[in-house]
Image (tube, rainbow, N blue to C red; front, side, top):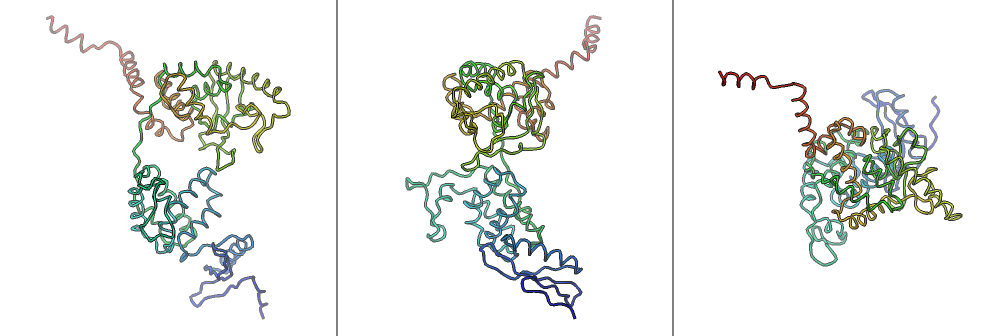
Length: 423
């Protein structure tokens, strides 16, 4: 006689149709327990599924069900699955979008009852809504009765096309995981067309404006940073995460292998945006000289600070661009610094990210090919480079056509026609 399984070990039985069935108690996202079943063709397959369910239960991880509310499934996905696959900044934005917009609108729908029409209707209504109304929704009010701005009237600040696209991406990613777990048969968000985004034309600084900006930035303690951003097109977080071990002043190169971002109240160091973002960049000699001077200045600041020189917890050793007391420079603070520099230089206000665009535009104006620019900026594909800077490639295309005339030599057809006319 087979030994009876102990309480809490779950059960495995053979069904009348020949398949095996396992049952055990698991946690719901709301903390309560429920009985969950798993099925398979063999006992070994079902035993593996049972072991996985019990391991999650021991860790207090909720198990998803096809009949659970979509809002509960989003909570489960964001807490247990997404952190393993998304970067902290992406996860933070997904959590905000879910909490503010998706869960209030679709949260009560059953996961297995969510339809393409529900998703399409939600996206359509979201695009036409006011963000302040959505964020100021009062849960105690009847459906459709929502508060708005503090001034008492709607500001009609509609979501950007990019925000709508991010909302769709959250739905698509969450439901794709539900498909992997065989909770739903299809990803209804994939059926709905991805909202289109109209790319805004990049307006970088021109060469004259860059010279004026750098002239004003010369006395700034982070002058080397501003020069580096303009000369190499580094992202803000990539530049602020550089350490002296990443820079070789003798060979004039730097290695990008991490970034820093503010996630809520913390400065988090992580890997760059894409695999191609991990790259080696050659430095202009002006940058090499500026970095050498910055290193000497940093040593002087360290001596002046003395015991007050205190690195931020978690920051890598030998950070290049620190505060005056050795901490991490907050990425958000750079935009405020740049605004002041632009005002002093008498140039239009730009973001720190626009200096990246400025670098690409200056390189294109000098005839540098798109492939080299792609490698320098760390774009994932050359298509991204061409699409982003198509409108500023006129000079490079004109130069290329002129070089083709030089390669082909004199136009013989013109010479023949002149000879016939003379005859």
